[in-house]
Amino acid sequence: RLQQELKNGRRLIHFRGQPVWLPANARVQIGDIQDLAPFLTGSFDFILLDPPWANKSARRKRAYSMLPRRQLLSSVPLKRLASPQGCLVAVWCTTNGAHLRFVARELLPSWGLTYLATWYWVKVTKHGEPVRPFDCPHKKPYEFVIFGGPSSLSIPRDKVFVSVPSCIHSHKPPLSELVRPFVKNGGACMEVFARYLVPGWTSVGNEALKLQHESLYEPASSEFPQS
Image (cartoon, rainbow, N blue to C red; front, side, top):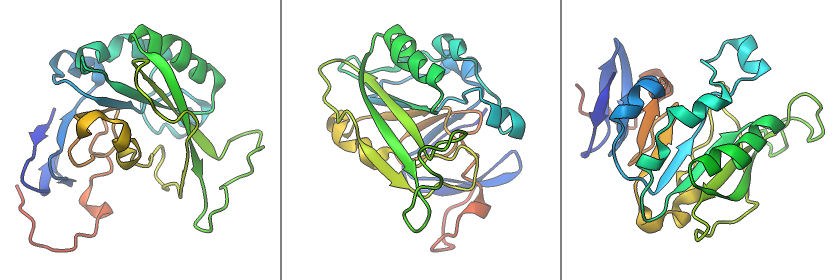
């Protein structure tokens, strides 16, 4: 496991022999969520989950370890990590109907949360067109973000945001700026099953440094501290 907290700017470190960038004020914990769960601490105002949902595409590509739906209930200690003042929770979800129903009807209620909203990430080309037709029978040009939290929290119910998708499998766009207006006092944020780091956030998961490799970045200056 790697645990590294930074407060004074981004740094280049070596992890398992590979150079990776860590952004400013980022905290990362590397490991299987089931193993890390007893050691996760903090009180968070926003928690984002990007579960490795089991699906045919992921099985064909063997892109990452998949997690059965029921295992989510026991592997994430969300009640312990959620701020007692009210925590907004978001879960990335594919267009699989079973996954969507599970999140809204079972997962959120099991954490004592009320379903609040569904946002839609539409994937577009560099020309602004959907990457495939909306009525494509095999794969849709969009994914969902399901929000839950105390019923007192107010958040837009049907927000749509668009971006050009990454060529890297399961690379989602960052939500930090989109959710900022709805997180109390710019509070503490965590991502579970993270695949990259966000400045100021806590990121947890087996692949939290996957997209931090030095080869994926072009620094504006070579004068960065290293370790």
